[in-house]
Structure formats: C-alpha cells, structure tokens
Amino acid sequence: MQAGLNPSKDAVAQENPDGPWVNILAVREEDKDKPWVKQLIEAYHSDQVKAFLETRFKGTYLSTW
Image (cartoon, rainbow, N blue to C red; front, side, top):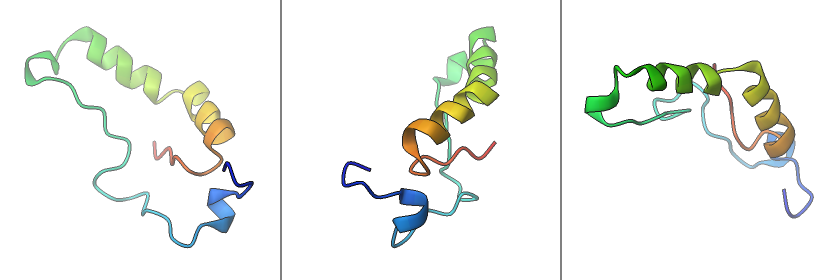
C-alpha cells in the first residue's frame, strides 16, 4: 500500500480466506465464557469493523465473516 499498489489487485499471491488461521481472536481458556468475550466477537464481526478494514487496508486484511 505504501508503494501505491492495491493488494487485492496487484498481489502476486494472496492467502486463502477459507484457511484455518483467518480472523482469529484468542483469549485465555479461563476467560472464554465471560460476557466481554462475546461482546468482543460481536463488535469485531460488525459491519462497521468490516467497512473500516476494507477502507483502511484495501484488501490486505480479509474479513471473512
């Protein structure tokens, strides 16, 4: 992006969006069922975050939800 290239059009290769390591949020085992974790996931999967990622990273970061 700093060189003026568009990653979604100009990349030589791109990671598979269906891969096992895409868009992972990690929390401690003892926190996995806490309410704030559910809130974090819901916020992360929001349309606002998806729009921000698409605008800011122009295809470098793939939102797969």
